[in-house]
Image (cartoon, rainbow, N blue to C red):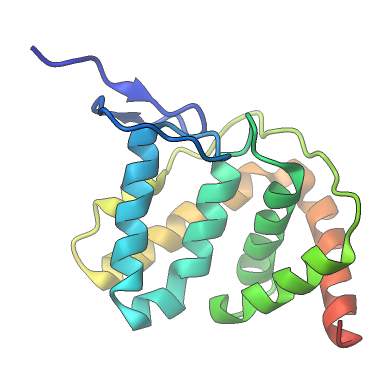
Length: 172
């Protein structure tokens, strides 16, 4: 007898029911979190893949799983990460330094309402990849769709990114 699948509250993907527990602050099911950990493992095991897409994977997962106890600071930082990479062409390995500067220079984080429609692609799309190049393509498609789902907040995110630019330029 098989149990009914579980639906992730963040991304909406249905996963076979598991027995895990997830107590982090992402608005995610334990099953979805486990798929994300599998994707992270694949990226950590391949230095080239890590450099190409790891930051996009982390940022896309974080903002697709906003809500619940997920703090505004985290949502904003990861949205800025997507903005820098997808809109401004910053190389993913260069994003963390910029995000650290942003985190150090913002005292009050705006609350951004969740998108009316979530992205259809999820981390499961990435986990299904058979090769590193397919994995990278899937991460780019997933992260682009997640970023697009937050379109009503793109201007606010761009303003936060400007703070990053100012902080990095000033040497903060």
